[in-house]
Image (cartoon, rainbow, N blue to C red; front, side, top):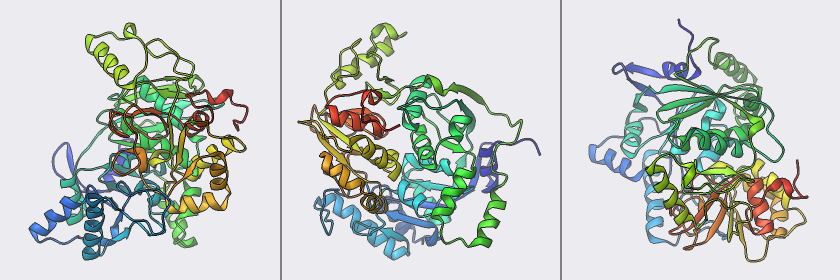
Length: 472
């Protein structure tokens, strides 16, 4: 058998049948659902009088439309949002699917809930009607987002007709510099290769930089790889992966665990495996990064200036730059540092994990949010929220002037009552800075949790490395 990439191994181990030279029928180990991409799929099943084939291999959560302000019990007051939540509850009850509804203690964002419950394990294929399903590659699982018609197909058959992707390997070596994180790393990579730089590829990350990252930091990296157009993101499982999975997959006894480790022993790209594209990066070049425009690839280091028209080689590039700067309200060739902000949002499936909140708490402890800034921290799940409260993180954040919210997607996207007003500028730990993403006319700057914490304390986009409170 020729040397194979990790991606090829995962696809081949889940291939039920080959459709043609480019497509296979792929078996799905776990399917996740939320309230806004599943209703049409269930309606399609009802119209065809089909049942959900394997209910126990599904998990549903209410996350995108749910309000996050502190309230017990949580109440969804928006009529359209309530209808979506009620439809999901009814469909799950009928099909026998587990649901983490608004007041379930395990409720949260799907891409945080599933790993922390030990549901994501190396070697799996995991699908969801959400593009950031690439997150699960951090644990050596093949995860990717699907459309509504594909959700219906998975519910009915537990399989999906899947077009096999090309492969790309990104090797990053060297220690991440002081003040940087995996969020800075992925924004830097996207700024280098472009928002379409990995379009159509399954990306495997490798190198000493990746090996040094925690499991949660790897999730941030894989989560945002889709912003470069990638169809999947993968990291070969190692001791870091196994420690994380063992800590969360508590249902596995010693015998089952040893059997699992044996199954996972070959989950890496073979020596000599060929990739369609290779990239090599030096982590020592990375600095804290922040977006200046309306696409994740429109980003610069905190000590750089907003680009001008001279940096663009085509008329289309010049037009795109003008449009982005007009929307975001910045001037070309001016420093990004010092740009005043109105809001700070820390959370989302990119940076709403306990590790992220620990970083923020270490920076803001004993400090105060700047006057005129509204700062929110939204944990990614009920479990993260309880852990943060038990560790004293929540108290630290509240004392510093942050709003401590209930779990949910919140201000990552304007599908709930957490959104920006027209013209408001936000330092955000989310994954997308598109026009209107956080609210019509809202202006979003993507950055790491540490950078967002620095912005909250100073009232402007700030180099976290220059804060005396920054914890290394």
